Image (cartoon, rainbow, N blue to C red; front, side):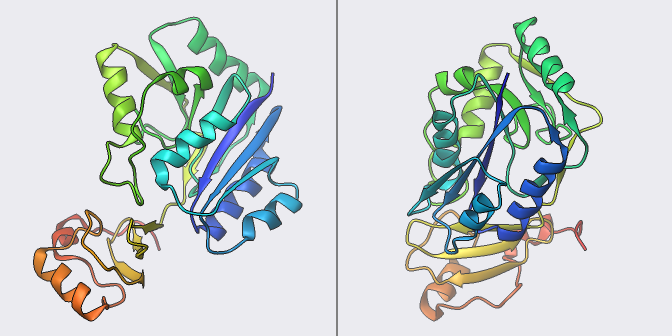
Length: 254
């Protein structure tokens, strides 16, 4: 049986390369690697494709966000099961044909379990889009609204929709231990509907402006005063933490 590996990327060149190389080294099963370059400003994904790290390359001219992008990947793949791995993760230990057969058996022999968490339960007991193995038909059967990090942040997030569906239908998941997927998510890059672009550290919450905004949005989490300053000056001090994020700042990454 062939399983898909689905990867969504928005301008995370180095993280994507690390993930793809880890898949080549540690995904020891029949697979088809799908990579969605979601409105990237550089064409590095094509180089990875030519290097044989990607089997199916999908390239969007514009960024449709994490929610719609994830839905697009699942609707594009043609296998029964898929690994969904975000581009700032990586395979830190081998996954073999035997492992995959065990994942399938666990899902198909127990109606309560609908997916296998592979990233150390980053949702803390609820569904998380971070590294997991799931039935493609099951995922596609659930109506979603396309929200998530990016230009459609304001819509209901696909991750939340999945959480509610599992809760309402008394469904659960299993976690692979030790987790074969590790986290390299030091940075996040997001684009808003007005075309503004931002980069932040996921731990310290330090923020950089890449492209200035023309209107307010739900991200970044600015106060009214900060939005007024940013919109008038078209500037944000490199690495400055928005005041509402200071209490959530911590240091994880070197």
